Length: 333
Image 1: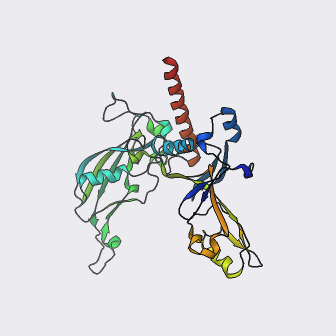
Image 2: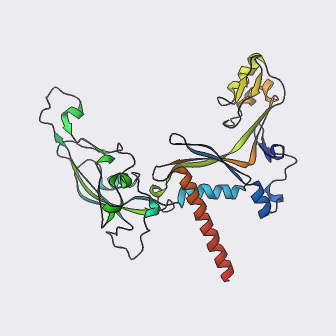
Image 3: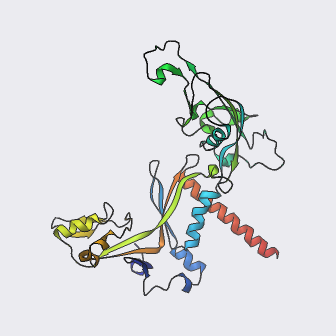
């Protein structure tokens, strides 16, 4: 990696972290835009549906890295159910609990295609800022069910209410612009309630655009976090049983063992920095552990409405807009 020898390190000892003696930390650094641009790197490591987006943000201050994390969590918008009109609920779930469950169902609608509601907006909303759904489910006993059957699926009809039961009700010209698959639930197998004969749900649902700062249901990410890049070095040769013991002290795949049963650092990237090696005094001096303090490994998993890379780019746009607004206020004074 470029400039590897000059990487600012935090060393991990048994009970504390220690700064590199050649590194005076952020307090001694004066911000310079040209230096910042030359150091900044964004490296995409992995991007798939199963593990989400993993990328490296290199050469930035902790405040900038944390700003991106917080923006993805709380200020990138998404669509979520805000109002629940309950016309009939004879299930055992209380109205307020049911409404809360409905609000947490993730929707596939792209928030960039909708506007925020204003103070002048009506409860019904418009086709530009509102999506409307209905949920009508009634549980009945199957006529062909025998008394000897014990499987509820064979005895009752609609005894489990899933998110797939939600039906989209287009407003205005929405049916010409969107399809039900583009604004429906991301997962159709989310269990909402369980019913028995005589139980019935009749709801009308209003979804609007919002941000996670107002309510967690609007957060577009399932998780967004970062960690510092681990750096592990062996200070002496470790062989035989000690090599396998050293390997067990780290996360799988971090320490490898060659054909001569000699330990080596295979890939320190995914180490959890657990410090288990300090449990064995005869191995504690065989390894030095540290973290690169300006190399952040980001992991972003989307709820599903927006792709992880789009969420990050939207966070960059939000930060840019905040900076521009701040500059305009300063210039106005």
